[in-house]
Length: 82
Ligand SMILES: [Zn+2]
Image 1 (tube, rainbow, N blue to C red):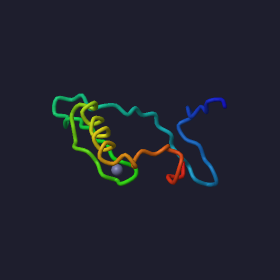
Image 2 (image 1 turned 45 degrees about the vertical axis):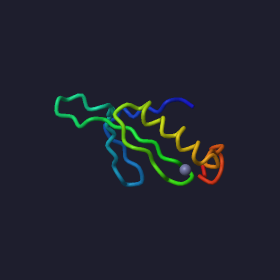
Image 3 (image 1 turned 135 degrees about the vertical axis):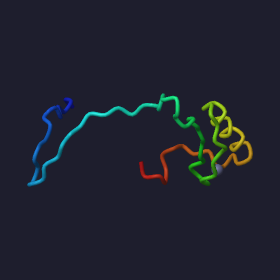
């Protein structure tokens, strides 16, 4: 599928005018930015690990959780409706 050019500042559909704006999502690098944190959550039981400032530390919780709850391993193609 070709990309859609949203360059015109606004377009009107069914009597409603929409204004399109470009934006970028990025980490806040300002000196007063809140620290970024990461946390993992189990999709089966919704338990979540501690918030960590390093993503690898947050991901380590997954391994510990699966050792305690091996039945919480899913194939990712089940009841979540994706
Ligand atoms: Zn779980």
